[in-house]
Image (tube, rainbow, N blue to C red; front, side, top):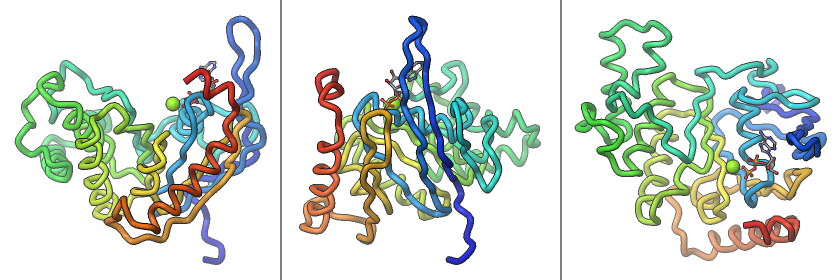
Length: 262
Ligand SMILES: Nc1ncnc2c1ncn2[C@@H]1O[C@H](COP(=O)(O)OP(=O)(O)O)[C@@H](O)[C@H]1O
Ligand SMILES: [Mg+2]
């Protein structure tokens, strides 16, 4: 599309951490990356390559050392409800019930109680949790806690859902179920998803684009547009061809030092 503005735009982004011992880690050097509205963009990379740092810059939790990250054309300066986050740890408030967790953002924004109740109901149904509204996080399975986390992010009607290995701690069966449900949610809401994983299969199952990150200073070493229609079959030749392409790219861009650490 001519003149279409990317939703998220990394422009010559460099990111350096300085440890307390004074040594510097250059995670990114002049990284460029754009995410368009409506995409389900997956980023794959080994532990320590900078995936969380990348997501944190979009979320507005950390600022690049140089360069800028634009959201709808404006530099990101702080977190915002338009960029909803879901992390690997469930990060729910343990002292609040499911519905209180989900309505937390709305309460902060001063949305009136009646409106909050409707929105909470709609979003709990969306993630299949309509009957657990009065429960506390400790009463829920890991998968259910992640559903609460997703509902809590979605209730602010975000333009993008930022997901950092959200299903990595779940057992394989629950993970597969959650992946399918996330796809339904993505279709139903039309939100953009930026999804971080170290699992190649997950990226091929979910993404409209999968990107492989190299070891630091990290670049997008390889990207594949995935045209397979959803729902996808994990065992087809097409699926496997993309899987192998990503796997080859991943292993040819991993610093052997990172492999030894993990
Ligand atoms: N707050 C921080 N201070 C210093 N170094 C950090 C900090 N956060 C991350 N790093 C370093 O930056 C690199 C990338 O980390 P991270 O973005 O968490 O990678 P990933 O999510 O891919 O595992 C790692 O070497 C990590 O040790
Ligand atoms: Mg991480």
